[in-house]
Image (cartoon, rainbow, N blue to C red; front, side, top):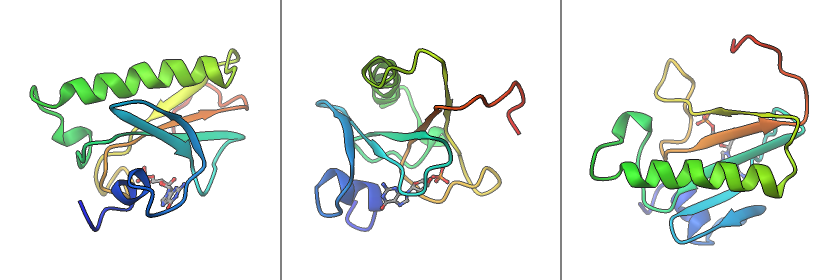
Length: 113
Ligand code: DGP
């Protein structure tokens, strides 16, 4: 989508700090990190959010999860990491292109909020 920031990052029109890439997935460091390690994993095909995952496109969500595991190995996140996907207004989603935040590098405790 021409007006999607993350589609433009995938296309190389907006610079990003790439962490990982394969045929289906692109991953890069968040511009506004909220943990010492903060990586965004996105499908190369535009899907607006988790709420738009269907039987036809769910393989791309699975590819994102495979990439999360690969990135965790690559970035040596043996201490653990958190994966978050904000979906819609109440969750604070600001970019309407499916993305999974990988947060790591500090102890986050047991509570999610
Ligand atoms: P969310 O609130 O879940 O929609 O998170 C969107 C994230 O995307 C937010 O943490 C900041 C990040 N972000 C937005 N624009 C850019 C950008 O142009 N480059 C990078 N690297 N990250 C961005």
